[in-house]
Image 1: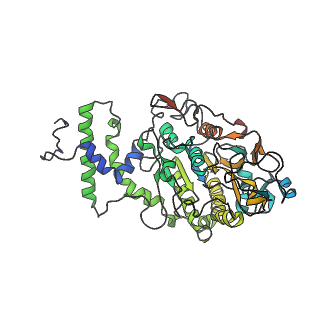
Image 2: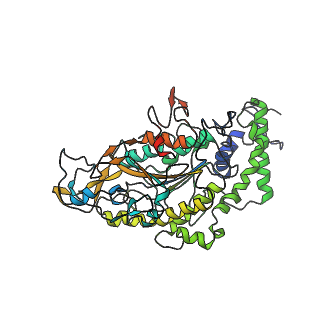
Image 3: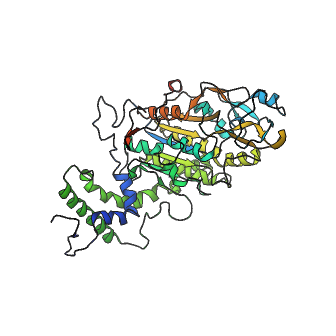
Length: 488
């Protein structure tokens, strides 16, 4: 029986049953929506092309990494208090910044202020790290620093958008969505792209930071939450459903897909996926199984700090990130920093209290994650990203040239780091000036940063594109260069 737009049948003798489109719309609010995001990206838009020359599908060259864990710190981490040691700033403490009137987002330019935390050298590389991140200092020989990052905005929301999507406005796909679109999934029963927001609150902009923009909706990030309640919204029915009923629902959907295929031809994108909806039921077990940290050893829990009240929450999410990539999730994003006005890396008034407190939440888990990836053989083909939208000023944020304890936004120079993925270990690229104010050596734009990330995953950033409203859109817009000096 063919299906038309006026009269539809579910095969049970009843007319006016839900259409396939209507059924999917209802189904998409629960398990089906999550399954769709996973199953339809199994091959990926670019990955659907036949591989040539022995390259993995979707890749333009041999990749250094197969998967990504991104740790994103909204609010602006102070590079000069954490990872960018400036002896001249120590000597200039309490003095006014010489030269042109300094730029500051809130215009309250105080006196130069030395780091609020003592620095020391770590590892064979001798990299300088402050007491904000002592445990990250302990793994410094695994890290690749970019000390000359530059952002285009000193305003949080536009800068966070650019850090995650390449653009300062809403509506563009996130990095994770581009990777889902380009490379597809490595697992049938888990999402391709997972975002784990800080449970203390979503930053202004919310889920737009992991949205798919103009890319097909199945490439958006799936939000997972640790702690109380269900880890994924609507993963299970609001009321209990027995296995037989659940099976019948999936069979009904599969029958609707088969009829849709008959009506619209074999070119339909669902043609090769008719069998895959059976896998949707697996997400009801695979996601909770991945989130079950009871399976982790005592040694692993101690490594991350699961029982340390200073960092227990982020430690659990860091372990989950590792468990997800082990099971085939391609891109996992960990957020540390809540809503505006709440717990966030935005130290306008009190750098030691603000940044020191936030650092305690992540220092041990991040170091533990790096060590854990190394010992499990995942480090070399996993890319770890540790970044923020901008840095902080070397002068205090204080009226009338006073010496306060806060710092203003600074988009003109800051530090991020990468790890794994065949990068140079214990290496620093670029530099800010002697006070840590502006990028002075090898400035790196967000476009350069994204181009390099894509390169490490086997993608030419100029070739990964999507036509939208007549424009050939890219993550890197019309700019970007790969920083080959970072690669071993």
